[in-house]
Image (cartoon, rainbow, N blue to C red; front, top):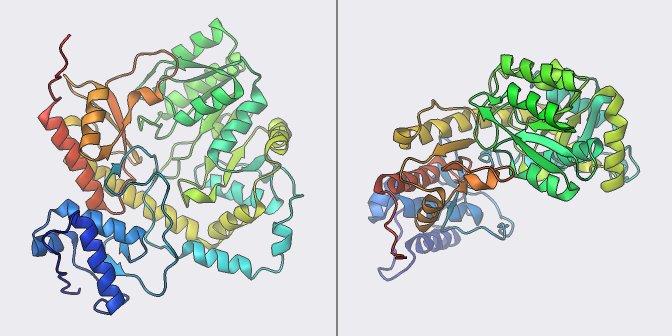
Amino acid sequence: MTMWSPSLPAESEPKYLALVDALERDIETGRLKPGDRLPTHRQLADRLGLALGTVSRAYGTAERRGLVSGEVGRGTFVRRGEQPDEVVAEDEDPSLIDFSKSRLARSPDDQVLRRALETLARRSDLDRLADLYQPAAGMARHRATGAAWVRRAGLEAEPGRVVVTSGAQHGAAMVLASLTRPGDIVLTEQLTYTGVKAIASLLHLQLQPLAFDAEGVRPDAFAAACRAGAPRALYCMPTLQNPTGRTMSLARRRELIEVALKHDVPLVEDDVYGFLPDAPLPPLTALAPTISYYITSTSKSLVPGLRVGYVVAPTAKVERVAGIIRASTWLTSPLLAELATLWIESGEADELVTWKRVETAERQALAHRVLAPWLPDTPERGINLWLPLPEPWRTEEFVAQARGRGVIVSPSEEFVVGRESAPHAVRISLGAGANRARLEEGLQHLAATLREGPEPSLTIY
């Protein structure tokens, strides 16, 4: 580890940007060499007399600029070789810690994509992979890979039942489009993934909320909705539900299937987080393959921008789903599907999943240590943390005060279906922050907000 201790002008503001500029300057002049290990966040903060959060923000900004790379468990290092121009999301603000995006932390192996692209570039059949005129359900090789991938979640499916999609959102839209017509009713949990609300709006569907408890959708509520109307499907997330993080027990899954079979209502199962548990419960689709549609993707488990997913449909419905894809996007890019296949075949996908499982568990444990007084439950494997707000907090007040501290969280209203009353709660997505120090900084801000309580209103009526 270097004894790097930059000199920061007393008048320089903000301090974190001055620190980034000093780092860049010392790299350019050769004072810092490629591969040098930098002081830890706390060491540098103590050395310079800065707040820990200031150093964490500086290191995070430097990483986004391509100056350094953070390696979990090892530290922060000056990057080697020439770096490409910085690519930053248009809505990214380094002064904020954004807990509103349900993303997983990035693996420290930042060369995995480069290796796959280099392998792909050497392929003699590269032109064929770029050919638009491939089957809408996906190339046979990619469908076989999809079958192998979902097997890891406990779902045995023949490749012929697999349809390759452009991510889980695309898969859910294609499945619901294949099952419904405008005006149809689709059942969901009372609090559900915002993406399915967007799909319902696009397809002009009516979402009808079902009561749910600690194990997910209540079978009695499902049965009552089936008797009262003519729902075309039930969309749900049995494992690590978004936003609440709840997981259905095996008994609950069987009860839901019993109701679905009795009333002939298809089950649309979103399992994008199913790779996180060490011992996942059987998917609904494994227990009821003739009436269930299974949806997953590589966006959460591997790389968000890969946009490759897999739908496992009942055998008799595969061509219907493929036809909807053909009518909309024609097919999922075979080039991207081949990248996913290379990762899965090489074993690198399993390594990424293993790393994300461990990292997610560590982040959950960290969140429960910091927010212990307000979290009655034990840590889950999921990336989303559901935080019920104690009295006298109201959701909008907490969200506003957290934002004032530079932290963004998702209010419960975003996930409510229909005109149901929203609970006083927020969702915290623990993938935020380039490292755990940055994550902890944001969590500490939330804890401080909770301890201080709502600010008194200055409005008099």
